Image (tube, rainbow, N blue to C red; front, side, top):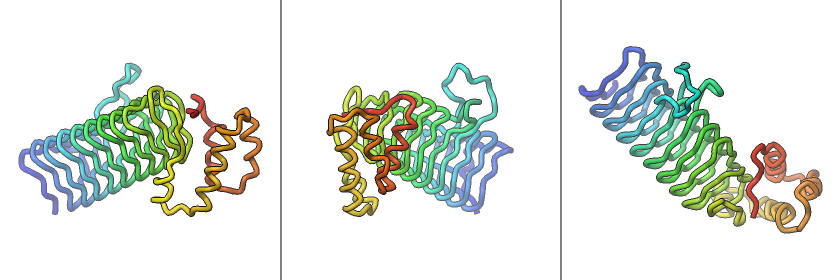
Length: 255
């Protein structure tokens, strides 16, 4: 049974599973799917979106509205929210453009109040976006990354998994997995040791990542030489870092 407030406006094309709660004055627009167990608080606006199971969407949030991109010409695109994700008050998540067709938020994310996720972004599972953080179009954020408050991410940047960015940072280049960055313009300040421990990573694995970080950024080797030195490292995490760096298009943030 659904609990839909009598003042909510639901488009005839919307598909709403059982056990969905929709609060007063919320607008559910066309091409929207909402899965079971999700709660949508009052005065949210959702359209052209797929909302996963057991999500919670708070007041005044906006999901799936048209992207803020002058190239957008009205094509049918979507915003996709994974199971168990929370979107807090006044957050905005735009749908995609023809470039990718969709904006994706993973499972079990926390999207804090007043944050903005632009068109065609891909955000992994377990990510935290802090208050008033702004993410430009085509940004990719890896699983379990933590972005603190009032951060700005330049379009097309990639943020590695299990990384952490301190509040107020301005990110204009890619940030490698497992690292911590801060400042304007953001620079690396070390590794996200606490995040790695919370993810149940073994101490031996963390020590290997520490050694790789030293080789990359503290050995005075040229980056290509440092990567070559690490190429036969057996650590899965080190190989993830190497692959991330080699595939970076904007270049990587450094200490």
